[in-house]
Image (cartoon, rainbow, N blue to C red; front, top):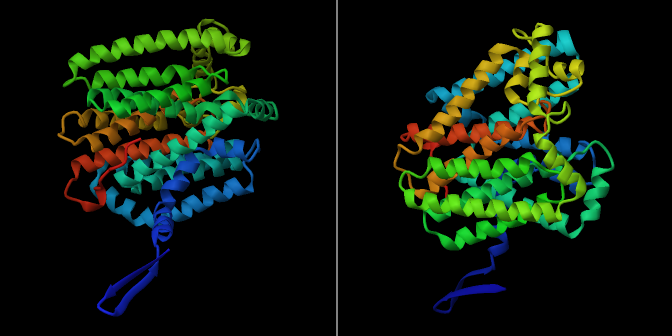
Length: 425
């Protein structure tokens, strides 16, 4: 389509419709957001590519991500670290465990492949400190869209899922981790939009919650079904200061949804899924997290790992199981000092979340802080595997986003910390 603009008899401008050009420019501007959302969805990419492990193309995606983020944000992060104590502490913590991991890798475990994955994960997580609120919003929007497509594909072609999961070492956690986060986002959206009387978006969020819940029914998922409503209820209670009456409605609504979800699960879940879910309350060595934690603590004491740890991935190599707890995992592999440092980082994230309730913020900025904290809480509760590209990186990204957003609440005079978040999920 041609556009022609005349003044008098002279043709001043004659150009083609520039909407495709604008779209291309927008995608180019959002390259960093798109690739980070792909990193968060790395297991989905493996499913689409029908590969059980990381191939050369996926490794290339991680390297491209580091290159793009370094070029755009490296200097910005260094500048932010000078003014913000929390971000500086977080950066120093990451450097410390990288150095400690390298030393333990050289002298103890000799597992340089795992260290490379750990290095890449930490580098990407640290570089995400450079994202502005608008960029963080767009990351989660792209993340959400990809998971909607993923859900529809799973529901439309369940045989492909079964064939993929039976073809290697992929388990239900790999397949459902991102879906559980999207379910968390949808339930939190329901709470927030109900509080702020945006009922159109409330019903959209309710529909998306149903989509993700039904999709998760295809797997023997437990944590990814149980943790999202717990996080949403915590968000509801912590944001109820000005919405006391509506909190009662939220509690009643969630009770009704729990009843409906229970009967739907009991009538539609597979026999394996039912057995896996009911095994949650059984006190068996394979299922009970309390036993796994007790065994982990005993192993740490018996092997004298309390102060210096077993080295990166050393606990798994010696004991042949994971601690299934991020704090015990750090204690087992790196010792008590890194574990205490991470405990302090978690405290900073939680304190930042508490801070948003004492500072007057518009809905958009408060919304984004709540969503990022929900992502942090979800990854904290579900983190149960080794320090690798697929588990550590999304968790570190959520921490970086939380610290970056709350740092902007304190240093309002520095423009590099600011940004408008105009996108809601």
